[in-house]
Image (cartoon, rainbow, N blue to C red; front, side, top):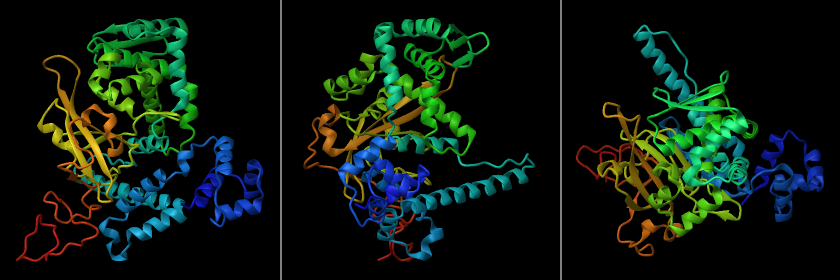
Length: 466
């Protein structure tokens, strides 16, 4: 694996010359030059020195980020706009391996292109409807998703703070709400009031009053108390983490701040060490873990994706949340599976069919075009503000891992993982999937340009004519 380009990217990100960078690593400038040009290997000793000196995760030098970038490039350059150039997967792999920053620049350029297309469409609609013209930019949620993925959804500073609040406050699960209220009052001077209101949570910095809706169930009330604690008590930690990522908009930075406060809340309700221990004891049974920590199905599932502490890792999961229309509102992957960024996902994933059996766990063994197999579970969840007349939104949560980790999950019981009877062939999206015989294909594959023969009908309209 060529690591020189990644080391060069880190040096440039730090704003250092080769001489200055080499001096901090204790090596010669000429040796650094050879490493950056892949003429000398990046040894374990130098790699560890890099990690310690510049406080970077060694995961940056693993193949995970390379695979993620390749996936993004394949999807971006899979646009019909590039069909005439005949780019192959081999071309893209070489680009990612030798010049990853160029690859990232191309992905960013394509994101800008897609944003411009959406802008034109919106402007045309606004002009036709005589609306005030507004120019949208890239969604802040997309920037925050990239930020979370870059950190592998694990933030040690916030984990340590959450553990500190348990240790210093002698917290207990059964009295968590009382303890959080007391912490807010005594440590932060915040008075908590529960009343009938439309807002779930509202903090008044002038009166130092935190208003919570009485419609919140206890687990959600605890979560909101912990969120406000993070925003007031750990603002410095949150801002420092945010500064490690180049956000393009103030809205994205604010959303990232809320996201990290939510992360702290999850770590407070489900502290790392006892939660990991419970996961192993209960074999990742989400409902049993929810009972133990008095948290929801989604809260437990999401928390499971954050167990990436070095030396104390949990199963590397991917997580996805969708609505019945197929819109992806949350996604993260530690399993290595790719998610579509610029189009629809594969309709054969069980997270979409979960809507057909509300409230029940569905299991799926699936194989991607590259041969990697995954074990996935999915279940619907219901969101509402309380009360008979209030609208309730139904979403589906998908959680999965590579099959080599599936035996650790209670959900895999009864399934022969070595010789499974039924494996579902899935892909990232139709455009990236090479399987031409899929009956659910909605678009032609990049590897099989659209061929029309009025006398031949394959498994789908987009199957190659033969």
